[in-house]
Image 1: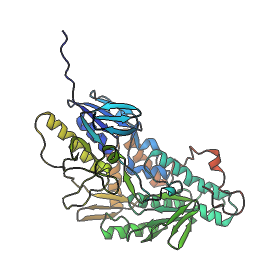
Image 2 (image 1 turned 90 degrees about the vertical axis):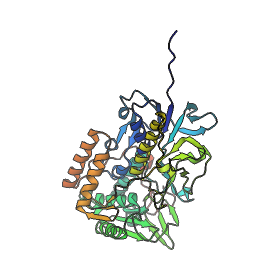
Image 3 (image 1 turned 90 degrees about the horizontal axis):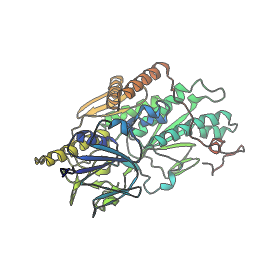
Image 4 (image 1 turned 45 degrees about the vertical axis):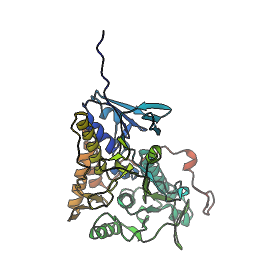
Length: 437
């Protein structure tokens, strides 16, 4: 008679972002059978996605295959699938018509774009969350310069050389600065008819200042740095309309063919899957141990959950928060499996916030300590290289940045994945076509 093999507790992790991978890393070798589910086969280092969108880095520089990351972890299985629901009665995750049973569930499904009730704006003002988003925006941006080079109508040429970024958070600030530098430095001598240095970059923020999570003095320095790069900053102005020809701010219209959305995000549908309370952004309201109330075996972390800090303010949707939450939940499961449950609630340890503006200026804040300028930019570079997945990616990104810094060039100015129909000019006559996408 063969000995009975005792089944290990099954942990299903949905999402291979910062939170999900951190949980999986901590559970490596632990007495659990871990299934990691993601709709992509790669982990994306999202903080550098804007550099892919602005031709500074290649997608492969900031992404790594999930299977290679977890290679060698005998207790972990990777599944490429899209989760559509969770059956709480049977404790199963439903993904691509498959049912994956779990004893413990960790939802780390991230966030998606939020257009505040104006989803019809998305085709004209795409956001930046995936590699596909970044490469599409890169093609759209570079095509604008190519079309402007052959455009004979002055108004349309100006429209093509105007770029609008909506949202004054880190993504918007970094995108606006990168577009301005690309136009004024990397592309400055590449064209014969147009002058890329005349490109207009407009950053729109509905609030009173940029980078609201930072100290006001740092926000002011960031704004001044952007303006030195030639970016027009519009504060206290909300977008009221958006179409293929530009945006409207109250009674002002800005004509632009290329618009980027960075004004808001909402959580994934995890709240609907679980049918539990969520905030206005769709983030699940979890307990102090990151478990869903009434479901102690289900945890929600990262951008999918709303968690307050010691002063009662919601934690920001940034990578360090998700990583620390992933480690916390994994350690909690391991401790409970050993019969030594952790009673300490999750507490976020803030190691500071960073944002970069262009090629040699950044701002940094850690509590009351503030830093800006070139030194902050060097720290930003070191921090982002350190947290990249894989030694190869760290070396390539570092070399790319050094090359870009010395030569002012961007090596990945490739227009790919664009259908021929999309490459035609947006109109065939000398007048603007309001219906052109």
